[in-house]
Each structure stands twice: as structure tokens, then as C-alpha cells.
Image (cartoon, rainbow, N blue to C red; front, side, top):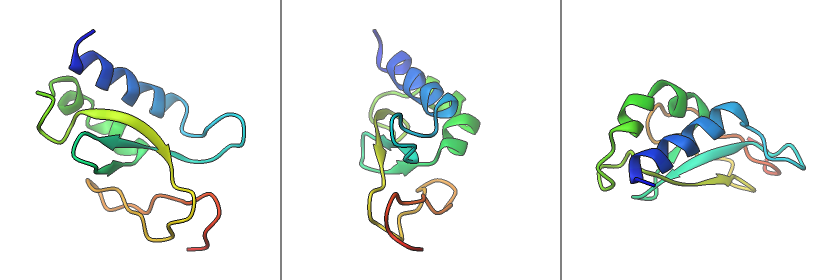
Amino acid sequence: MTTQSRSLRLARDLVANPYAWPGGYPRHAVTDDGAALCCHCCDSEQQSIATTTGHDGWCLVASAINWEQPDLHCDHCGARLPSAYAEP
């Protein structure tokens, strides 16, 4: 499987399932350079994610849950990534 297909598959999974199961915790994507992307950007930037070179900041490597950081934001659009336990 190529880097592009893995990255795009992760983006599409996040768009389809923005909350972890079980628990219902909000998920976000993590890129190869450590950036966080919200589910909206995973949806709107699928062209960039699908054509990633693997080292350009659009390569999704994991999904994560923001457990306690009240000030975590999407590195693309700046939207606040909700946390599971911390107050905003």
C-alpha cells in the first residue's frame, strides 16, 4: 500500500468517524511532521492528502484524541480541537 493511499484512507476514516468508539471522544489527525488536523480539513484537503509525497506535511500517520489540552488547534484552519476532559 502506498503512502498516499494509507494517508487518504486515514483521512476518510476520520471524516466518516469523527468520534472514537467506544467513548465518543473527538478524534483528529496527526501528520508526519507532528501537526494536528481537524476532521473538516481532512475532508476539504483530500486532494493534498491523496497526492502527498510523504514528507510535505500532508501525510497522515495516525489519529489521536485530545485528552486534556484546552488550547490545541488545527494547524491548517486554526479551529479548536475539542478535548475529552479539559474545559475550554
